[in-house]
Image (cartoon, rainbow over all chains, first blue to last red; front, side):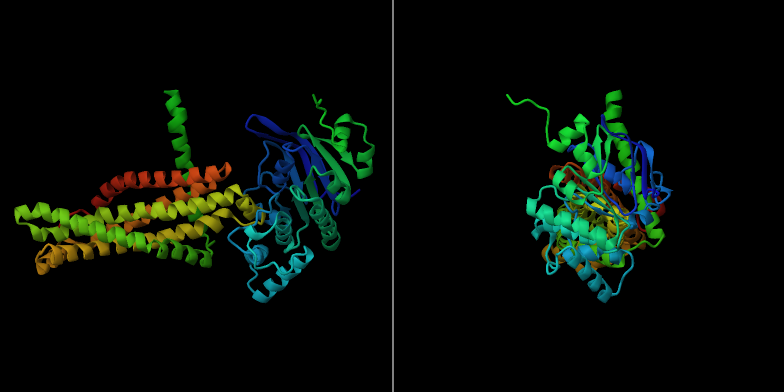
Length: 250
Length: 261
């Protein structure tokens, strides 16, 4: 069996009086697309933020490529962050820059000063996410799906080892969602990256996942393939897969 | 008593601590050469060039009105020619730096907080961090350098226009003898007064930029939170500036004593 690229052990996080993560343990294998399912507000995005050092856990460890990252200082995290691309839920594009400058941002920040190289790499990234011809638009003038595509282009312009997707299809219509799902699959093939997709969208899960984990009450309740998920008998897993709230309608 | 401690004293200590940490990290970044020249130049244009109108109007009309008021008092004592040095010294030592600081806190400080605060609540600062870009280096350092460079120059501009306006109103409107006015201003204004003005401008620039950036970086709860942070910046910067001005005046007066020697 492959050594995990990311090994998360007993991660605990509390926000205010609410326990968000209660000892989450999970391995992400190199090259796979792992989908993390869970209820809205269940701590999926919080977990994702820990993987890139945007939040520090109360306890537990995250080992990325053999290095424990939860104790690293902000500047020590920078080399780790260069290997991880993150797609935020709303894209988090820089609203003072146009599409071109947003996508070029990581390149320029990593010292690329040759305008021809920057132009070529931005063009390549925009082709990959099917956003050619939109490079002069401002983020405010893009639709939700386009913003996510541009954010993805920004995340992959310096090819990362891992891409973290935070609710990539949330708020999108089924057709745009499908195009984003195909994009995730295509990027994994073309860039050979490891992907961790946080979502509550079962269609997206079935489309992109190699393995699926279900987060419930701050812990991993289920881990397996999509067919394991379909056959699961655990009532909590079944309710999620079948979309049952358990509430009675009066 | 514990309620006062919890409600006012501890938050105030926390605020001072956060301000000190932010200032420390910013100065450390500057010392390590983590300076983005293009962003700093853009901020200098924003802070310096963008503040021209408020600084020019504030300096000129403060000098003019102060001259008129001083003339009305001094004329009764036949001391009209003392109006020039009184206005010049007041502008250099107190009014120029304080008024410029208050104007810049309102115009530039509020804009800095609003911009950084909006970036915070829309996850753009998280995106910066996720892209391995330190937000202090990218957002605070250029603004701090711009303020440190621009504020002393803006203070000089404010004071200069105040003295010019004073000369115009005193000599051309109130008929003070121009030769005596100018000679007295020259006689009573020392290099130490100019130094005091520049030092105050520099310190106030630091106060404004660190308070503004701290409020922006701490903003939360969406648009309402950004509005709250922006208001807090203007109020806190203005109060801090006025309070700090007193202690700075006392300290600088030891180094640069007032009066003709």
